[in-house]
Length: 141
Ligand SMILES: [Zn+2]
Ligand SMILES: [Zn+2]
Image 1 (cartoon, rainbow, N blue to C red):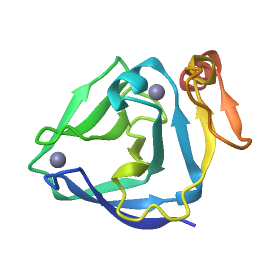
Image 2: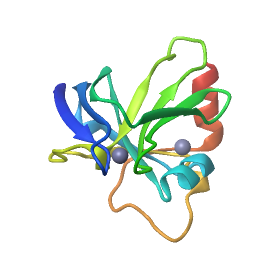
Image 3: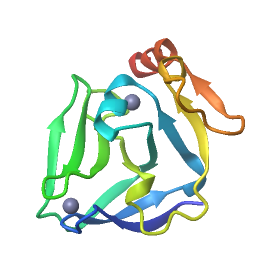
Image 4: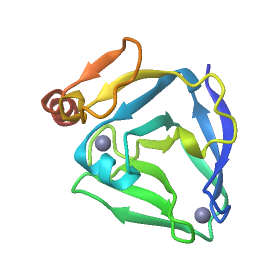
């Protein structure tokens, strides 16, 4: 079921309402960029839209040819990922589950770049796993 949920960065200089979020549809990304940016696996949920109720700390960085990442320039929290590449998925946005005020019902149903996952950790349970090559093929398709 799609719903709205509020969230914020660590210091509160970025606050938002995420619209059209399905808690049971979170995914984790093990790609090298997410690992560096988030300091560990990036666990995120796609949203239909983001409405900012406080954005004085909000900043975006173009992190690759295809995407930008949103963060708080006051406290450094990693918050958002948004696809900038032209195509049918342009504008697709996800946010980290840690930024949500209410994390109840969150389920991780997919793992991206599974072939890049460090051996230091593993998620319990079974779910769909996508390799780097498969993920890139999806983006281009
Ligand atoms: Zn902050
Ligand atoms: Zn990633």
